[in-house]
Length: 163
Image (cartoon, rainbow, N blue to C red; front, side):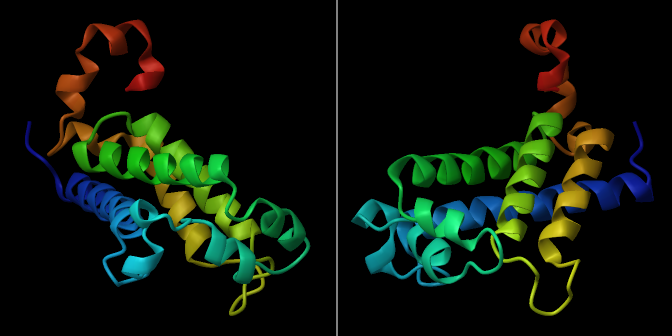
């Protein structure tokens, strides 16, 4: 199947967003010195949620987010979410689930700092969420990814939500 220009844009969007999520996971896990210093790495005992949820939250839900900052369950859910969404998007599998879960994660991060500083309604998290919902609908993993092969597996044929 020939891949048209529109399909290539969706593939690039899928890969770009996948890399953003996967990179966030790797940096928080290993503390590569970009967003996370080595001393704050998850493998060194740091919490991937403590800093942002303690000091980066604002608005009407800030108290809720500050209250869960550094919670072990929240740390695990956050890191597993980053890993799942990033890896699935990069591989081109589980497009529906990874797109919707990634959009949910983006909306949760957006609500942690209401209202956004530079625009009272819209920021990059909302744009990412919209793009991720688009990925859930278009499912561009079938182009330059493992999505087509994944869709033919018995488990996906039995449970299409896994496509």
